[in-house]
Length: 353
Image 1: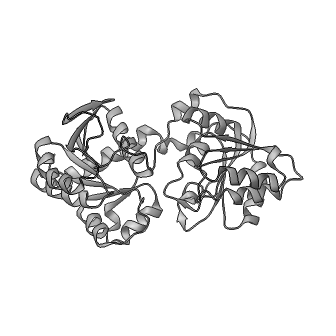
Image 2: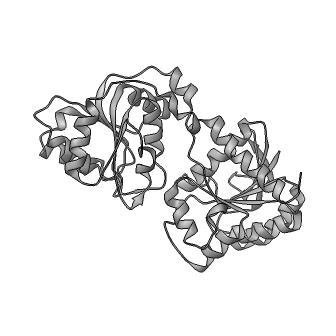
Image 3: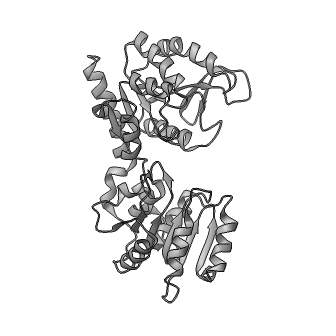
């Protein structure tokens, strides 16, 4: 299948939640043997119109990512010339969704919009128009699906497709040293690590260790807070870690705490649960963290610091394990098939088979 992916800005320009998610989709399709073409602004240093990078072909419609208006003008014809079977567009900025719609109309192919929720629950006229023009909208979580439906999109036209994990990769990595509680996220103003620190401080008379994975502008403040709470000798702030290092830590961990106030999809929690951790999630209205633990024996949803502390204690009494094979639905193959099934369904509905 030939897929035209539309994104003025790519992860080559800037690594964000939105561009990172879109890159993952491209890599899933590429790894499945599909022909992936990205219509974007040039990110390479010379003036070539087309470059190939890691099995994906990039078409630079404009010289810089600031040329959004020119990009939208050129997009419909570029889609028509490419001759793709489906067009998959990033929803940010929304103007490119509208331009891509013109291109798919000319080419008579389906349009799928990848709606990460990076704009929050913003309800501007442009976002409403963009959401309604796609044949289907993909979101990473039920939380973001709700935001899209509030823009006037029929719920049947919104598919929830999670960020993928790699079970084979998890199996291949040995667990790190044992630790009782793990937290992993960029340490910024939305991290809310203080909930975990305060909960652990209530348990200072008990025997436990914790590992904090991640770096960011709040790291120093959180380390100072741990010192003030007199628990810094039991917490290892390991800083930024690559995926293999994170997997090893999760496999050596017992409980994973998810307390961020804003979370479009709890990617690190998903990896940790598959690595055998028990999930403890603090509920927040703008976080999808709780979606992965609802109804699970090895998962707890809390709404206060007291509940969080109690849940950590209860979770710590459950059996330790370093792998959970019940997360097959989140594996890369399964997630790729969700996208392919969506494409084929849209093609079938349009009479393109």
